[in-house]
Image (cartoon, rainbow, N blue to C red; front, top):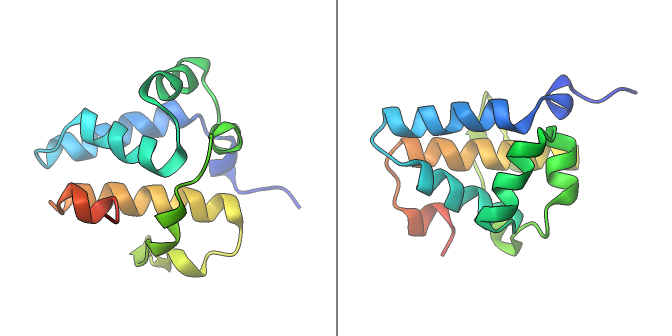
Length: 116
């Protein structure tokens, strides 16, 4: 069974949208990067490298050093779907990221977004 089309979407194209969403709400690109690095284990240079390489979401998460152990604490609804109930592991990771960016755009404190 083929995967969802988001799996083959270039991460860089969605990353740009994440940054735009955050900036529209008075947040920064650095905060978006901090969230992505926290979730995936990439360092800033590794994140930039994945963006420059044009990695799709599947490759981006496959190459991620390590999903943060507290990512399981991410709960809530994104696009009408409860992230903790998403069965496909890759889709769940993508939804985790969407949820974190939503929380940033809503003005939530970084300590709470990063589950500290």
